[in-house]
Image (cartoon, rainbow, N blue to C red):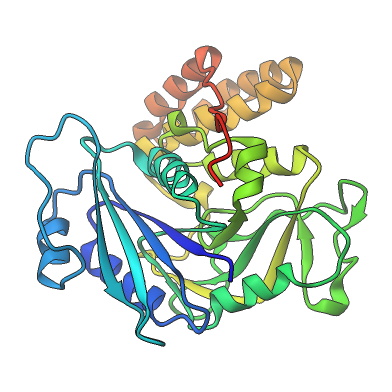
Length: 320
């Protein structure tokens, strides 16, 4: 049986993290590993994990580099062992840095499938089983990633985690396999995304320098650009327990605004220098419509995008 490792990135959401971990332990198709990337949480996350017996010892204080320790917990479905790889980061590297670290380490451990999610993601019991069943369909296509249907706490679709649809995905109609209850997509979020290690070997790792936002869109779009297609299976369901059901453009936070502007403009620059220039001009022209608290972040994001040129880290060699 192929091995599956969930990659969970957490920062200061210890109670939701416990819900996420409990849900992972109840999957009808069990996971064999969990890579938990703790982005230097300051809310007592390690102590709570110790209290709930997820880890057996606390990480050292005043870390200067990531600290990793492997522990064992039991699957609540069949009692089998799950390896919990706890990584305490020495600094907050954001969601992008966390997923970069988690994907890299899980790949190096030799897991066949990586299942990415945030700490406030609560997968329903059959979520993983449905994702893996999708890979057994005889579709004759190169599947790059598979994502779940993401709902908010009131069971409505989560605006932040809607997969991206295009009429054609690498020459294939998005609804070509509608009879199987799936759609082909061009990009998705990291809130419940399943990816095979061979794809990681081919396309490399998520860009850690993004820090937050658009790292998932960049990564999944990069996968599609390599000739793969994404798949959306709405029968696999997870709950994303954010405070409100908002899209990325509706969130009022100057810091997130900065990263959203910078990272989005970088993606445009990578495709077309002319479109990048035009988009920068447009963003400068609309500054007058913004709230005063967002003007500075908006301008800084535009300026940062001009010089932002992160490297894509490749996997050096196949470990398995």
